[in-house]
Length: 273
Image 1 (tube, rainbow, N blue to C red):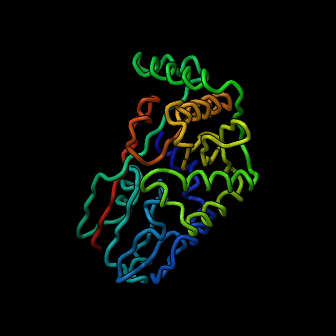
Image 2: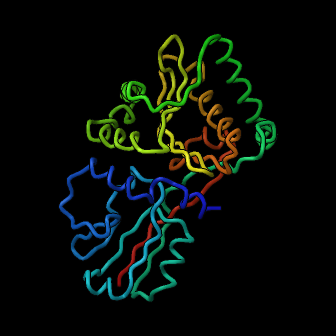
Image 3: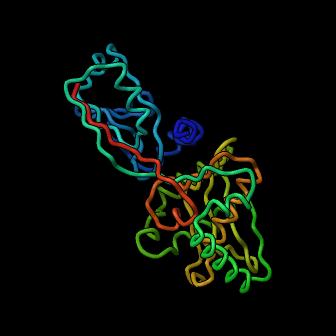
C-alpha cells in the first residue's frame, strides 16, 4: 500500500525536482539531482516543506567512498524505504526518528460505500456541512482546469489566506507552482460561483492515486463550508475515476481524519558511515 502511494507520487519524478530549483539558490553540491552534499553530509536537495515523499535512497560502497560521504541526513521516508536502504550496508551509527505523517484514504468502488465506511458522527457532520453549502449556493460549478487564468486566480486566492498560509505563496513559490502546473497530470480543481473561484485545489493525478498538494478558499465564505464541499467533490471524482487512493499528503489537520483518513507514518534517518 505505502509503496503504491510513494511510487505513484509526483515527488520521485525528476521533473518535480527540476521545478523545485525555483525555490532556492543553494551553494551545496547537487548529487544525482535528488541530493545535495555539504560538509560531507548528504541530504535531499528539496526542502521537506515542499515535498511529501522521497525517492528510495541507494548508494553503493564505491559511491560513498568516491563522494566522501561521512553522514546521511534524510527525511520524509517510509519505513519500507529505510529497510531497503539499510539492508544494503552496515553503518557505524543509525538513528531512525518518527517525523511527519501523510494522511490517505483507501477508496472503495462507489461513493455510498465510502460514506458507509465513515463513522456515524463524521458521516452526519459531512452531510450537514454539505447541506449548508447547497442551501446557500444554488448555482455553482465544479471544474478541473489547466488554464493559466485559473492558475492566476488560484494564486491570488491563496495569497488571501489567513496566517502563515497567506505568506507562503511568494514569487519563488509561485514560479515553482507554475512550473508544476505546466506539466502533465497537474491541474487545479475548483468551485466557481458567480464567475469567481470560491475554493481551489492544486492536484496531481496518477493512474491509481489523486494527491491533494495544496488548497485555498475564500475565507469570507467559511461559514458555508466551501473547503469541505470541494474536498468531498475531489473524493467523489477519485472514486468515479476508479482511483485506489486519495492522498491528503503531509499534515495532521483534523478535517483529513473527518473524511476517513488514515496515517502513513514517515521517518527521518540519520546515519554515520
